[in-house]
Length: 174
Image (cartoon, rainbow, N blue to C red; front, side):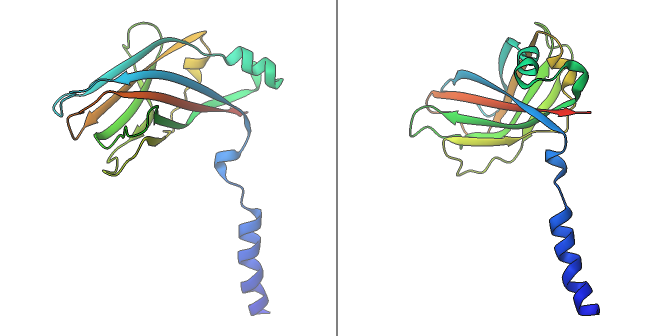
């Protein structure tokens, strides 16, 4: 009997567990921004890139997926990815990366949506950044939101890096 219990318990635990990450997911909201990281960025200062007045697309996505604003429980950052558009360009010069959200033209109050520290030295042309636990719902209820990408460098950039940034937010139901 005890052997049977020791066999059945792990099977039940693995079969019955559903990841919290996928509970009540209504849909994802993808965003893409292209920008260029210039050559010669120093290692002393933080470097900022602002993307102002991006369309939130929330209402369009709600209609497309058949939901209303009343169905939204929370909107969370899921993942971000920086991709160099040309071969040979790498992100090995990046030490720390973060993306902040804010409303309006001026970033008086920012909230960190994505963050990664200690980026590996052997990072190639793709840099994945996990989302934080931020409740970003307030930013997407407006027609537009703004974002600010910040990073610290460990090396001086020796060439321009044409970058495509993809940000994914997940909309969860109540």
